[in-house]
Structure formats: C-alpha cells, structure tokens
Image (tube, rainbow, N blue to C red; front, side):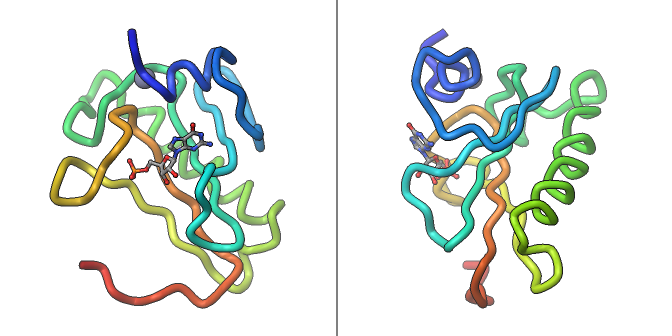
Length: 113
Ligand code: 5GP
Ligand code: ZN
C-alpha cells in the first residue's frame, strides 16, 4: 500500500522515533507546530477516524495511554498539551493514515476553527 505512515512504521522511510510497541509507533513531526510535536499512529493502517470500528478501536485507547506516558517523559504533562486528530478535508487531514498530534511546550492557541 502506498501510504506514507505505513512506510514510516515499517522503516522504509526514516523518522525520529519516540516510542514503539506491538500496536503503535510514535515519532517527531517533520514540520513541528509547537516546541514538542509528536505523532502517534496505529501500526495497522486505519485511514482516519471515519474508519474506526468496534473491531479496531482498542488501539485508540492505547494511543491515549501512550500519549499520557510520552507527555510525562517529554516534560509537557504538568503545563498541559493538546492531543488532536484531523479527519478529512475540512479538518485539513493531509496523511490518510490515522494519527494523533501531541502538541505542547508552549501556550497553545485556543482557536479550534
Ligand atoms: P495532518 O495534516 O494529516 O493532520 O498531519 C500530517 C502531519 O504529518 C503534518 O503535521 C506533517 O508535518 C507530518 N508529516 C508529513 N510527512 C511527514 C514525514 O515524512 N515525516 C514526518 N515525521 N512527519 C510528516
Ligand atoms: Zn498507512
């Protein structure tokens, strides 16, 4: 499958890895929008939130566990951070492999749209 994040997960395209286990992979965003900007992705190809089902949704709660762990390790847990996923054109999704942005290290803008 010609998917950028599948290629990052399987090592075909290099990335700055932050964390990896059996079901998820986390790496630094190539164009950070905050001092700390990490992406957490399921290893399984799920295109977006639109593709989340009862069969594959366990990885989503696991991603939030990993987000909490990484936020502590990266030193942004106490001051606060944002976990966000864009779905589809109106949200500006550019890579169609589900990913959760973890953004922190500064006071983030409040605007959501
Ligand atoms: P989206 O706009 O789909 O929510 O987020 C895609 C994110 O992937 C963007 O923040 C973008 O900077 C990041 N990205 C795109 N290509 C690469 C890449 O090759 N490597 C890494 N590490 N991040 C990428
Ligand atoms: Zn993929």
